[in-house]
Figure 1 (cartoon, rainbow, N blue to C red):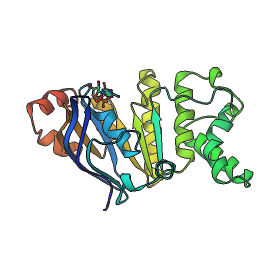
Figure 2 (cartoon, rainbow, N blue to C red):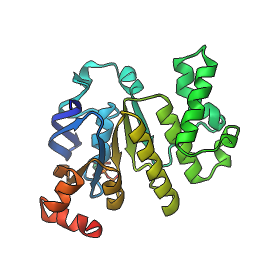
Figure 3 (cartoon, helix red, strand yellow):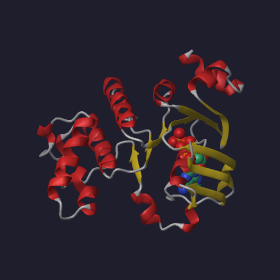
Figure 4 (cartoon, rainbow, N blue to C red):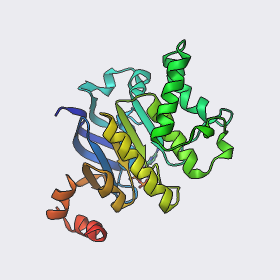
Length: 243
Ligand SMILES: Nc1ncnc2c1ncn2[C@@H]1O[C@H](COP(=O)(O)OP(=O)(O)OP(=O)(O)O)[C@@H](O)[C@H]1O
């Protein structure tokens, strides 16, 4: 498999605080990468470099083999979905319009095609058709999260970045959303990079798991590799609850 995302000797410094140092990572196309680590270990910083929301202080990031420095940011982001915790929906648009936002931009004239795309994604994330007309303030947290995931997927991105997308919902909804994102992943050839604080979630979803501490990679591997061969005391402590 080929690498869809590559970090080469990446560093990031805020004032004199170095949050990433000599960071090297290859993510293969089609992978579901979950990222877990201590608070402040640089996970969000790393994620936001993929879609150029944050620029590295040193080193390079490549998406599909092209250096982010050489690419128009708008063009880059068209291909990369981004879902964050409690993602903000457009409050003045109903569910259908929220989801249709990007497809509408892409196929301006073909309204039927957009309508079909909205129906497909609502179905995949488990939203009944009757939600189409509702406005964001008429949705529960979990429903709003589904709409936001459907919206990020409706643009058919090749890469989906998710920063603790299920952090703000209750345990039952969270499990449902996890199952739904797995369904999406299994039905498409999307590559997902997913940050979580929940080690169980990291192991349930990830085809590969990246464990970070203080701006460095503690371990990167499959669930089996990490469980069978934890690379450090830090990893051993982290995985206690899933052993
Ligand atoms: N814009 C900024 N200016 C200064 N410092 C920043 C900025 N953004 C992040 N930092 C610092 O960089 C470090 C890494 O932040 P980052 O958000 O990447 O960590 P994280 O692993 O995602 O943390 P969490 O799990 O708490 O969300 C933290 O110490 C944070 O305070």
